[in-house]
Figure 1 (spheres, one colour):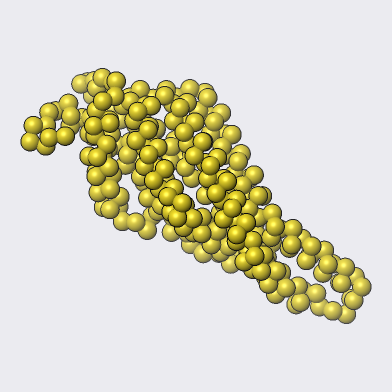
Figure 2: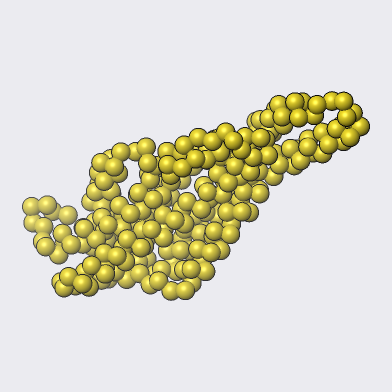
Length: 259
């Protein structure tokens, strides 16, 4: 884009592209983390909008000059960005839920911290799993995929051409149901070990009633939970890689449905 010879039409195209990109940047993992200052997010969105401007401009679309149709076009771009950002967060919500299940079973249900992403209280183990998944996401260049998906969204969905059909709702519901499957898959080994620990402690409490099983069992379950988290770390890395493949397909399918 030649800044010296820019036209009013190009300004509108750049603005609409920026709206979609800024919405996605502020909602997807890593880029949307609330600890990142808002000026940096805006600057990143402006830079990406400038880089992708040739891709955005080549789309088949018409920009209305009336206020109401133009405002509706802006809302469409915001909704597209929100849907893509929401879909991108499902994997990490499932992993955080897995950590919360483990934390509650370990006895960490009353040990919560403030999540800087959402500003709400979350389980300590849940936050540990969430941060670990973000690190793995960066290691396998997941942020590169998000940037490519952002570029692909303009190729598949030109400005103002998004189609919000019932299939989108069905797709989002199907993806949200995956959250519980992901949570069980990630937390399975630790939950089984903690269940067996509780089962054995119940037998001991019945056979040796003189023993204060609460005093013994509380630190034991913490030890078993932390031990399982440590030895299952390679399994977590493997499962995350498999889940990330499904994550990519889900994002691409959402974009395809809106095209």
